[in-house]
Amino acid sequence: MAPVNLTPSDISAFILVGIPGLEAAHIWISIPFATCYFIGLLGNFTLLFVVGKENTLHKPMYLLLCMLALTDIGMSTSVMPRALGTLWFNMKGITVGGCLAQTFFIHMFAAMQSAVLVTMAFDRYVAVCNPLRYPTFLTNARVAVLGFVGGIRAVLIILTMPLLLSRLPFCASHIIPHTYCEHMAVAKMSCGDITGNRTYGLVVAIVVTGLDLALIFLSYGLIIKAVLRLSSKKAHQKALNTSTTHICVMLASYTPSLFSYLTHRFGQGIAPHTHIFSASLYLLVPPMLNPIIYGVKTKELRDKVGKCFCRM
Image 1 (tube, rainbow, N blue to C red):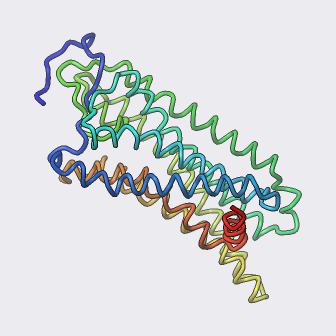
Image 2 (cartoon, rainbow, N blue to C red):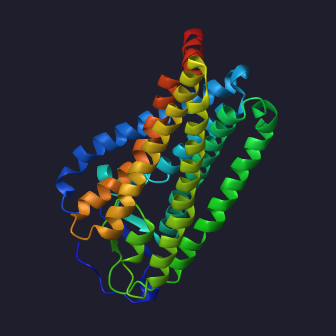
Image 3 (cartoon, one colour):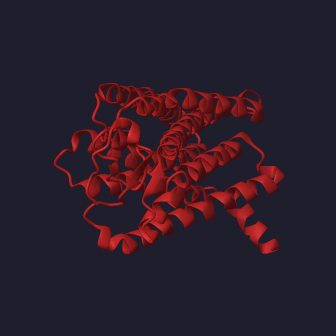
């Protein structure tokens, strides 16, 4: 579809083209996308159901898992139903308001997920380094407060993104070469100065991802230091096992995110469809893998899932 010459006031909708250059393969591309999405939904809703049903799982660690599951569901659902509509039914039009709302929810849930991962690292730090204080210090109420603070932080930081986009003029093109309304993908369609958008996107990356990763590395550095001091081999193994589960989740969550960000910022020579694949996988892979990792690595949760399904 050729770009249409429009004045800023004429723009009432954007067109999401899906994956440019691979339009003929959209149906085939949608299969792994839909599979990842539905596996993620099934896994996360199962986790929420089992933790909600089993009173013995009403602990800070499982409350954090529920928060992570909710952010995973929100993040993938902000994108995939709309993206699958484009890939399956050629539904390309999206209103400006709908596009700005999608931008907000995608980045907000990603920031909330990052906050939950930091809280999970802090939870493991207290459990390993101060095990005697853990039951009284990190209660369900405190975890809920930390989750609430993380949510408020995400809303306040990300709200500026759609506000900055809403001020941009879109004069020449309203065609977005993407499967969803990602902040910089929309900004690049503008005929105005997008320096503010670029700068704010960088600030968000540093404040959210950079700071959160630094706190996570600090927590796990202290955890490793404490584990090495343990004299009991059994306690040593138990501490490492719990920490390994969390590290797997961190890697599953941050690796696709960082790859997507770096290719978008510095990969000018990379094909557009590679950018779009990495940006889509970053929203699909963690929600699919997180419940699987915890289901496999956490015996208590695995046993309760088995019991719940046996009763049905």
